[in-house]
Image (cartoon, rainbow, N blue to C red; front, side, top):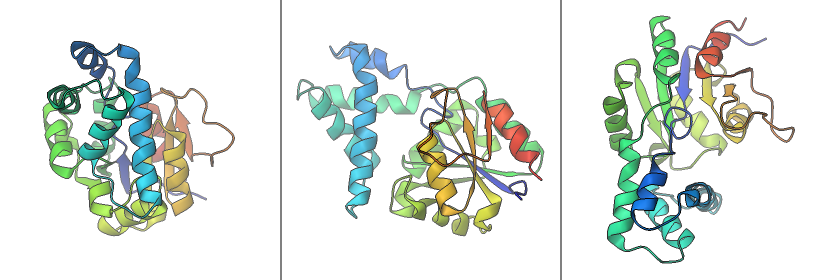
Length: 222
């Protein structure tokens, strides 16, 4: 039996915000647009590898180093500054505001569980019109580990003073939902990015085609 969550945390990168405009910045510094995907995958992999090794993985430092490596040292430090600064300017997906608003108006505590710094995440949320619906921000910097290490979800539950079984993570990444489930939390998976969650991951408690559907189904758990 699963009860509706009293806290819902949203992943940020690719769940709430669209990374595609970073491709334009890559083109503006002489790189092909298609390098965005391998760069972001390298960025995630390197940060997870540092976490597995027991070391911190600061967002900006890892983003810069992975971009430097993926472009085979072709970019100047100014170019790297320009591309990485683009994270602060990215737009939200159309379903982000309605989903957060719906949960907030239902009395659920809404937050973000992300890998960027608290300050930059807050700045993004304010610029994107999401901050008014967000009660708390929990980051990998706070927890000392990156997702999907179980400790980050447990840290979030403790930090937000809620039993972990009443905390839900919402993400478009099946591996992120898997991490939340392994830690004892609820998970809502949105199919926008991956289409199918894959058999190697634990099933999320609810799934949906967009964030609003996921939010509705989380609140309907009984």
